[in-house]
Image (cartoon, rainbow, N blue to C red):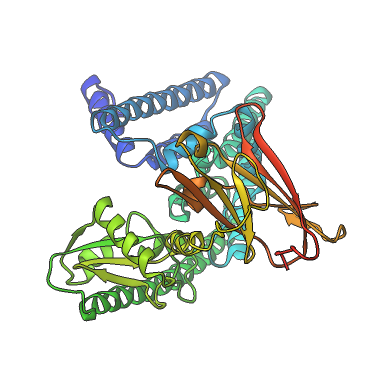
Length: 483
């Protein structure tokens, strides 16, 4: 696209659009190439007019890249609209961070927070900083010793040189500035920046300094090779462990008495990291990633399965709730459940265990006696459980969020919430998670804490602008069920 000729530039522009659409780091790479080439031209410029010309040409090229990005972005948005896709993950994250305050924080972090390398972070930060600082100094040295330049040209070259080097971190961290948390591998434009600084330094220095520069680059290469060898060793061991684990799960499915034939309906609940030593990227493994956890069973096992729909999953959840046995995360007990030739793998069983416990606790409500508190919802306290009961009950009455404040009997006992010491424990909840509506009655069960003796509780429901109802119950020695 930098050659003469309209058709050549048009074709290059079209390729640039689709390149950015496939992987947006192309924006950073092209910007770095423009910057380095501009600085190389400026270092040989003989007049301020030439310098201005090279800077103007660079800005035009950056503008072209920005237009290509905008067009590519609109094309992607069009496809999302056509196929009814939603902005999730990084796209949604960037949209949430689109404010001036967030932009300022990201800019500040760009210049104060080093890239978090997995291995050898201190040596790499030192080597890159040395090369970067050397590039600035050597460029300024080149400008000063050019005898043919006027003072004005030298001053202009110095300003452009410093601005360009100050812009390199902005280009390398462009996704972070836009508010997107990117994986370490997406920092590969850093390699292009390092290569560009090396080329600029190579042009500027000679003799012993050039030898030192070559030595510095050799050291960087050695550290990077060692880095990559450890990285891929950890990756290979993680991959093998995940494959073995996936096949062990398949064996547990086929050994179950409820297993009949394949294809079998299969569902994976939750995520869980299974890191091997030396592999710290938890989300880059199948069992701790939403997008990869089914792929490992499809490509690395011989299990023939089809995705389970929500109705089938609800059927299994009802079966487990009625059975009443707690579920443990894989590889624990009951972590692989097969029912009517449908298989569920529980990597995180928190939700199902809440349902199981809720079903068990709701049966304990002591309706045969007088409630401890008469209110919009009657309150019963039994076996360290606070029950909410209402009959008749409507869906509207359980739609609003419930609040629950639990006060310790010992005033010196403060409940820690984040960084604050509070005088009460908070157990706010939604009815759907801890209660059920059945036969025109609503019942919810909340387990009270046992780590401290309870003085009183305050509970009710939030309204739009105030509380719809609010009651306080004080525990006494004979009825303190928080013991």
